[in-house]
Image (cartoon, rainbow over all chains, first blue to last red; front, top):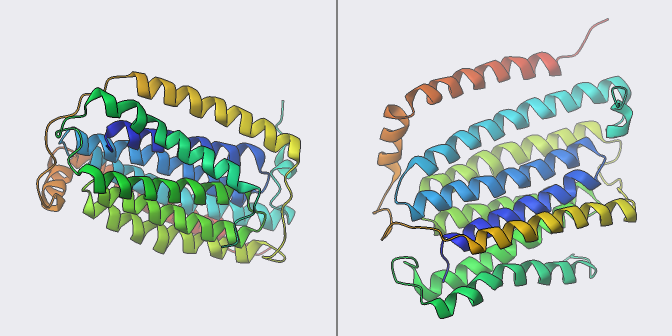
Length: 100
Length: 202
């Protein structure tokens, strides 16, 4: 039935779905939403291993991952506001000056 | 349900992808140790997995940013349900509080403050979407193949009862230094975000 494999496959599928959104979209906020989905895929892995190995390290990792995700959300949205004030657009193409 | 009809093939594919390991593993004889919850847990798991993947696809393919936020809310709630299934009650609650209560509200504020009209539509070029889907599908299939071929060792039984106080002790003993560093990081980011978001007077 539902063993560790199913949970980590769920994590992998979530990661891939987030990747589709991240690669195909241009809007900064939508790209950020997609990274959140990818994050969720990773955290599911940590929690699944925590359960099936009977150790709490995975859950502790998941808590740190949540902290990092919250930090990233705060900073990313602050930067989005700053960028919007400068160029009045959220298109990632507007910020391609450093493209090689 | 406002799910576009075009999404259903992808929806079904994702759920089939999740059903494959179950079909592959059943004849091998899964012991009770690896499947503590039995049939009911498996059913709930597949329902939740279907919900999570479907709403994540909704985030990727819907064209309206407010709808995307709502789909993300469903995804995050579904992931919280997965944590409850994995006997991580505290994490499930934290997931709901931090993500659904914090990050998502922050995000909706960001959307409302930046877009000229929150109902603006985003059209994705078909070619780019196809390329991205091809890359991600390759990644997903190869990951799934590797994960299914690997033999995962799992300890017998389940983490007993309430894990919350054990988790707290672990955080404040084994992981004390990362815990403190995370606290400092949060403070630095709070100052940094306030600095970034302040109104410039020129």
